[in-house]
Image (cartoon, rainbow, N blue to C red):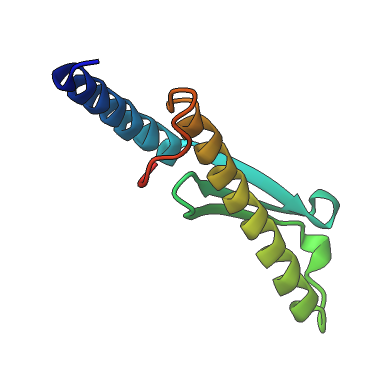
Length: 103
């Protein structure tokens, strides 16, 4: 394989990866906690965009439990986005290359 062909393939791969990363950043991932009473939505970039709390959870003296449940839902939504990004970017890698730094 000549060097020019390899460089062209690397550039194509880099362009595909950049496009995919943009698409992944625009995706939304939802996760729930407390049996669906708390719902968090995060982008593929790990930004929280929505949080819904069932009013039945908001009782005096239960703020600490509610805070823990919210953190759980948010972390799960962000983890889903990261996992999806790794899976999608992994599809771009030619077999046998393993991982390339930055991908």
